[in-house]
Length: 195
Image (cartoon, rainbow, N blue to C red):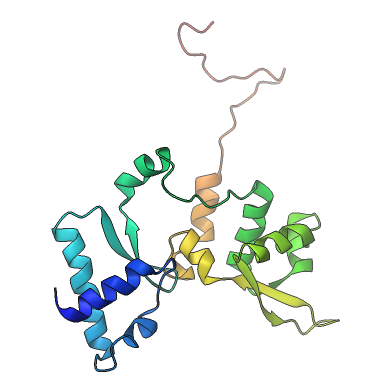
């Protein structure tokens, strides 16, 4: 590995967040952006070819050294990793609305969900998953919300274009209900041995 790749590796190892290429470039004044990208490619290749337990991943608008997925479960089981707090169903629903409709105001989110979302938005703001990105043009110039780089990092996305398309989600979430006869009894076949 060349000295620039080693320098980048040290910076990435020390950082708890993804570091954008532009920030990595300031580590060496003499290195061009192309040289930094080449060093990142070399570092990624080094981890892949030599079979390390970590990998270099581009996500959340930057680069980060992460545990390979095949070792994550064992590390979590041993409670060696810090787990992020789980989001409630309501928080995930609200976050999905923000992610797909951003920039979006609180009133519009509430309209879509059919409930007040003030407390949930506050929680998402405190966790750093959403942020105020603009002000609307309507009455009172409402705050408009969007997702943050931490959102991308938490969901292992490089950019918002990697979110599943809405039509793909509709197909994946569609549940098939068993057909019912007129009396309300299910017409689904009963597995053998269960009657």
